[in-house]
Image (cartoon, rainbow, N blue to C red; front, top):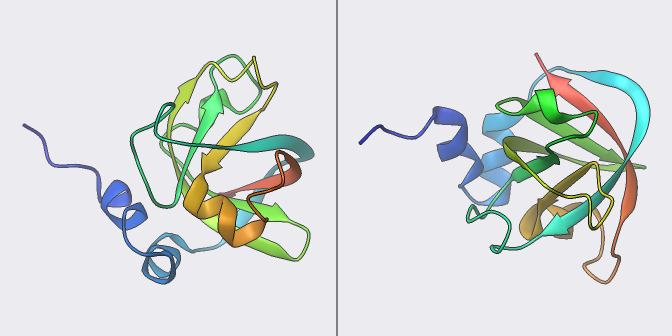
Length: 119
């Protein structure tokens, strides 16, 4: 069995520690705004600072990258752990419930975000 990537181990930590580990200089992916939702363990088993992208969407090539999700004045760093079919929800990406709770109330179903990639 292979050991998890260091980014996965960092993203599994508590929020302050994961942000310290994943944080870095981030550059806008395109400067466009993307539709973001949150997912639970039915979509990905990972808990922590994680994202999944729509497998046929414009962000599909970001799997394996550390992303900064920007929602107005709030933001957070997440590890893009995979791609899946998010077409039913029409999301470009979805972040874990823990990450969502740090940048938007859980009662909100979707938000428009800017995606940045950590160099």
